[in-house]
Image (cartoon, rainbow over all chains, first blue to last red):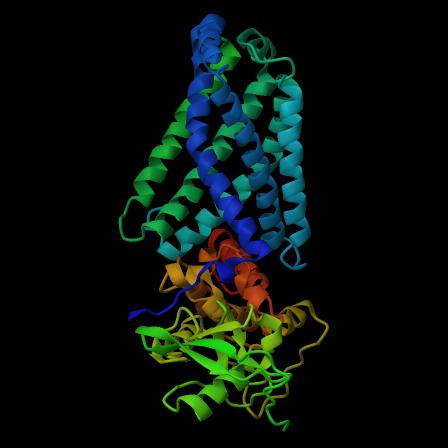
Amino acid sequence: MSSRPRLDSRAKSHLSYFAYACHRFSGLLLACFIPLHFLMLSQSLRGAQGFGQSLALTDMWVFKFGEWVLVILLAVHLTGGLRLLMIEFGSWHGLRKGWIQLSILFAIACGLLFLYFAN
Amino acid sequence: MGQAMNPAVLQAKLWYAQRISAMVLGICVAIHLGIIFYAIRGGLTAQEILGRTQGNLAFAIFYELFVIACFVHAPIGIANILQETFPSSGIAKPIASVLGLLILILGSAAVFGVYSAGSL
Amino acid sequence: MRPYNRDMANTDLKVRVWRGAQEGEFVQYLVPRNPNQTVLDVVTYVQRKLDPTLSYRFACRVGMCGSCAMTVNGVARWTCRTHVSQILQGDTLEIAPLNNLPVIKDLATDMREFFNKWKGAVGFFKGDKTRHDDFAKVPPESEERQLANAGIECIGCGVCYASCEVVESRPNYLGPAALNRAWTLTNDVRDVQQLERMRAVAGDAGCHACHSQGSCTEACPKAIAPTASIAGLKKLVARAAVRGSKWGKL
């Protein structure tokens, strides 16, 4: 005897749901990161030297990896958000699946650009 | 605004505020991504960053607007997530408020910090 | 009807069907394959030939009434319009009642909350003309009529409601069907309850709870897009809350 079945991944295995999940997940992580980011930058109040010391902490590879992930999350959240704005404020042209594909490409592009520019 | 806002009106206004701030952030983030890619070339040093931002009023205004847009946008989003994941816990509003305060205070401190470069 | 020929078919279908109510279990039945077999044919076979205690709903069996909606391999569908060959995974099939609705028995759900929410969203028409007045003149190509027409074909089958994660997580969320209907009536220039309707679809049980996940639009067998209708309501209600609407302030 078990409980009646509920919505599972089979009902959510479509592109629009995936876009929602990525947007929510990226937003959540960004919201957690932003205060830390501001805290770091506010070390600049201590002048170039104080700021430089804090900045030196971020030379560790784990920070670099985190920055790379965050740039990608930012790209995902931006394009996913633009897609939502189009759905909610623009005239109806379906679930804007073209935008989802664009988001993925844009996020990959940002990730690659980051790797290219950051030695 | 003397009377208590009815909850439906509040929900609608929060939704509207989040979408308007999203539009502002869309522009800010696009510009910021461009700045990130420009800035990280060849590594990032405090001198380089401050060299660009110190005394730069345009930068300061842009980033303060960015901070304010984040301050509106992020807490509403977080409140939604918390309210849906932990519906009867009542933690959505307090955590969202704390996040809002952190963003506004730390963000403005950061903007002022890079603008003044420590020379208060 | 062609006699079932064991020589040509390879194996029977293994069909897992939910038996019970809120508590229960999946019971497996072996159902002979047929060409052009629909999931409703399969359920019918089980009830007529294998287990007469199985409860399920159907009516027209030709894709017009929406009564036969069930969860097939995890996705809400009209079983009369779903060919087994379309959704078969190997040789198994899983049939369950619609999600998000209480189960009465086996594959039949209690749809009262679905229709109550329809009422709750003021998803019904009320005009102010009588038989003594002239006909209302609504140009079919007017923007409002086109918006209404885009969502008007809904037959209340419940597939969208059963597919929506927000309905699952917020028990009092009005849901895609009710909100879609509300939107079509918002665009009905003859209707006189617009302010009540706007109030009904505002709030956190209303349109702003929708995250545009799009499961409703993906699932709708009539190709209606509740996501679009709800987006329209979101804008309308938000503007009404901030600036007022042509029918008054929220």
